[in-house]
Length: 501
Image (cartoon, rainbow, N blue to C red):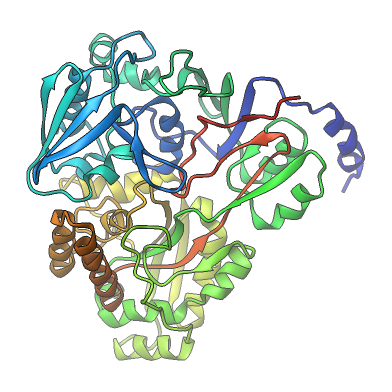
């Protein structure tokens, strides 16, 4: 191996000065699914969409609900919430933001003819009633105690006139929102560039003039940071931590996001339709080994789908310790003396977790056929059939995915992974669905928390899904760059900026 790159590194670092007003971020290996907030439902797309669009409310770094495009709100009755909208706010094309835009956005997102994969999360909204130009009332079909938690991520406001002019496809190619940054260009397969919105409603934001999201293979990301080609990596492998720490121009920022690795067994068909096979999973999985070998020490053990910091997290539940003999015994009791054969699909971003999990399942006798897939492939194979009953369902046995919770509420992982209408769900459990719907309809927060605790117990007892590890995210960034992570795990660059010289 040539030593030339190593010898040249100090020289390159000396030349790698930050470009004033510009921030280059590596947040993924490939392009987002879409920049239309009503056409995507994945964290990779959301992290860019969030910089371009606003919702009525948003989450602060600690996961608390704070004003967004709505300055204030109140509950009128158990089915109605009223929002007072900000005045003098415009979309990036100059079109005014008002009550009509809110009404249009809901109609567009819930239109059955429009492919909105996140529509199910706000389908409880029956209508948007316009009180006046700057006041709207959201009416729900039934009481919805999670409504405010869902609005920051799943109800983005879009410009009706602009979409009427350019159409849905044109809007996806050149989106316009009210957010802190406005779209400039999309060089497919390489990067997306956005620039500061000079008329943004939040004082002092944003602090950088240009924001570039660059897509690089995992094995290229660190080299790009150390060479000064990029300013920030949003998910650094633990193996590379010391290389960043030892570099005088870079630093590590760690965040215990609501970011977990989750195993979703297909309880509708195949081996995991048997409860005993599902119950074998937590005995087969050694969470400590996952933290040590896959997370490289950057993780915490979990026992439920939620984590500390999420509303409704049940701290009393404990997963059993890894016990391969117990797992093998449960498999034999289910009639699998030499198996079962498991077709496992793993998100490519968490390949190392998939490899360790596959090895642990093989150790207890399962024959694992592991395949990795991109977010887009998982969307096409798993999510689309869940949203469109005319498509054949996914025929695999075990999905290994990861998620961040943009609601800061345990509602979210239960919804996407377990509820029968969830986009990534492989379950059909009437008891869970009934209790989940009861949780949503409960407006009193204390009573709602109690139902969340019961949901966690039910999921564990029935083995419907399992999150063994909360990942502690490591950001690698230039030493003079300020960035504040969000507990909800989504990227927010409103206040990111460079230290003054």
